[in-house]
Figure 1 (cartoon, one colour):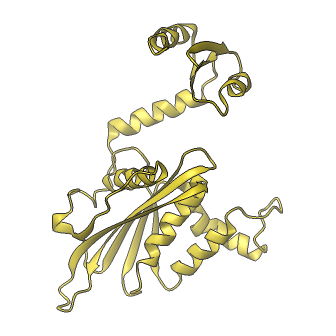
Figure 2: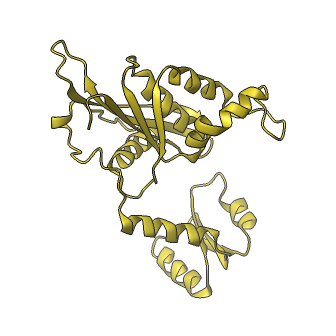
Figure 3: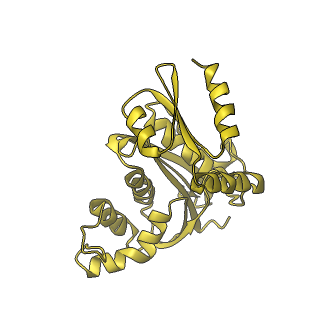
Length: 247
């Protein structure tokens, strides 16, 4: 990595949407020491909000990371798995600003306060915004997800700050994805988009099946429950058998 380049990974998470949330970021940058020898330094940052959304945490992760960088002579590359953040800062904000922070549908832009902060901390910085797939084995994204979800869950997250040589994730700058994980994610997405045979719910030890998501949601909302969409009668039967053990 060039000593004139700063690399940032960011991620956000919320439990519920809205709900408790957290953000995480990793900054890999030259260390500005008195000798000026450009030792590479890694800094992890993160935080929590009690009531927020996933999109706000994604934005906050980028904001907090860029706030760490005061020296504008460095080129910065940001990697995020949020299309919302990437498209917003590289495309949408220009139209929003021109239209008085209104969408094409003439509605108020959501999270305007954070978009304005992101624009502010991006000023006078040479930033390249990059989308990276989430949960496909990219080391920086995986670690940021751990930090963000840890804070969202109220965990005591240990954050690293120090020389890159001592950082436990040795492949932190490798942004190539794991083909197997990417395929599994694609398969999962196809499953989520497929037409449901039924929905199965488990509440207070009792299993029920529902023909529509609305029926299932009405039963599980606000309760400690398990629920899942199934695509066939055989899948429904196997899930009921599996969950019967949990009752």
